Amino acid sequence: MKRTVLTYGGTQYTIANEDTETVQARIDAGLRDNPFMWLPVNYGDGRATPAMLLISPATPVAIITERDVDEQDEGSVARYLLPEQTRPASIEIGPTDH
Image (cartoon, rainbow, N blue to C red; front, side):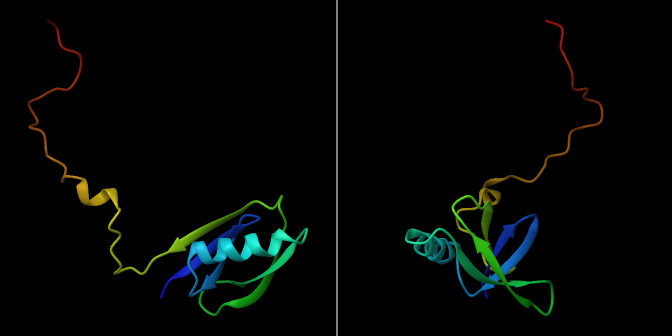
């Protein structure tokens, strides 16, 4: 199950079963004709508590998609990283004299 995490006022809140694009579209639509809107979210770990965030054009809010642990991200750079190679202990790394 995907959920979206929002950071608001230094605290994290969640919205279940919505991706970042959907949450952003809801906020955009809510602010299109109104100076502010109330966004229903969940607060807390484990058993979530319903909460409402007051959103305005000047509200700093970060929207983050949280993925399932077993979900693969095809765009991840990590798949291109090679395992670290060990260097022989006799090689010193530093400036060389030429």
